Every structure is written in structure tokens, then in C-alpha cells.
Image 1 (cartoon, one colour):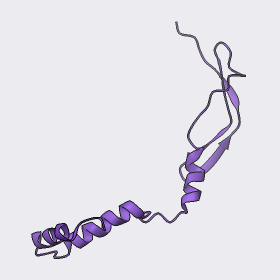
Image 2 (cartoon, rainbow, N blue to C red; image 1 turned 120 degrees about the vertical axis):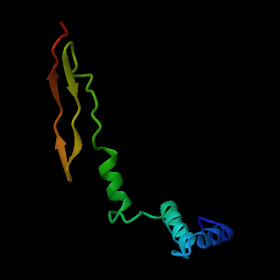
Image 3 (cartoon, one colour; image 1 turned 60 degrees about the horizontal axis):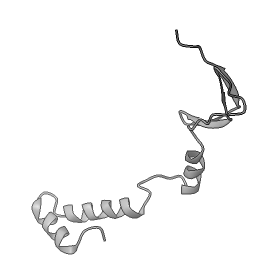
Length: 95
């Protein structure tokens, strides 16, 4: 239970047009605490995508001077997961 019985009763009495306001808030609060709020993906699938996406890591073995090396990784582009290979970027020096 998200709200106590007395909290629900007070909220239910506040709005005659919606006599179940406390019950609705209690249900939403309970869903927030324990549920997935309408997400249909399995938690393992979401974790698998989120865990390694959108984070770029420097590759110290290929970084030298103005050459920045980066490790391979994965990003989400729209609704598509895109893998990218390791590589390097030549940076320009400041004037």
C-alpha cells in the first residue's frame, strides 16, 4: 500500500467529482514503486540495451598526441541499436 487508509479517505473526500481520488493515487504510487509503468519490454532486455549504449570509451593504446583513439561500442539511433567499430579521430590543435 502506497498511502495509508486515512490518507486515501482524506483524498477521496476532497473531490466529490472523483470520489476515488485517493484510490487512484494509491494505485499509481504502488505501480511506481513495484511496477514497470506500462513498459512492455523485459527488464533484462532494457538493461542489456542501456548498460552498454551511448557511452564512449577512450582507447589509450591508440591515443597519441592529437589522435584520439576510441573503443568499439553501441549507441541507440532512434529505435535502432547501432554497433560501431573502434577507431581514431584526428583532432586539430588550437591556434
